[in-house]
Length: 322
Image (cartoon, rainbow, N blue to C red; front, side, top):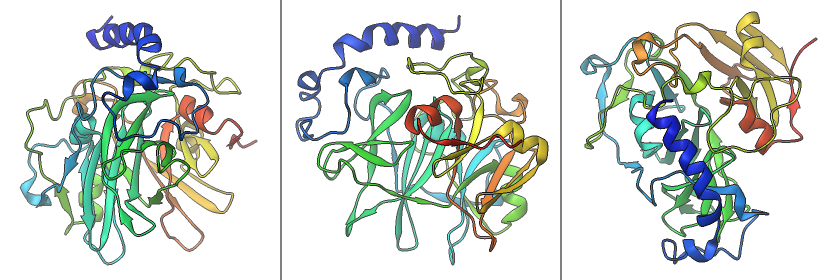
């Protein structure tokens, strides 16, 4: 058993009793109103190990031209954000694996780029809520193995996969998802020769190495005691979520293009898994996904593990085809 697996198992066994207690959390979160929440049982919330901001979000990231980035392997995954009228930006997973949130501004839009390694969930959010600009940090807590974020303005807690406030003043508020997608560094460069890429943050981390060795080959996720997905779908198989629908990535990869429910999903090879080998360069190929509407506009979506879709959208529709 790897050190990571052993640590996760130990934390899973110990976190349920000591950490599932808002009275205990109030010492760390004195400005969070735990009386306002949609969480039915606090036992759903586990400590992932690090405390508040123990995984530090990146603020005001710096960017460099494509030609100045010389460390990344061609198949390394990046999150691409290409807003209309703005220079496309690549946010490398080699940084987000260690920071999970990047608070940025693209033109006039404050954006938060998020990545939860335990769910493989990568989502870009508009940080504006009712005229207020929110920036986000990492609580160190997990629910259904998904990162719980917090906003620094009200210290409300947010479920990353949902983009919804779950504790505090912002409970029930939904963040707007922005169109973004994961692709390889090579694919980003080919599509956006004038694009820019996030520069290495000023922290000491093992950037370029995956600390979740072989995670997406496990039979079960860490910090998750919920039901398995239906239809015999493996919990740690990837699905493409659009709204409350999920397409198995294996089905899309076989077809390469599917048009259903008002959207067209396409897949192409060339992107390394962010959660396979320690070195992205030798990780297996999981391919890249784009989702567009009938006019060719990019549609917000997420490529996450099947267990997370089932946990957060238990009544969601599984797009299994015939």
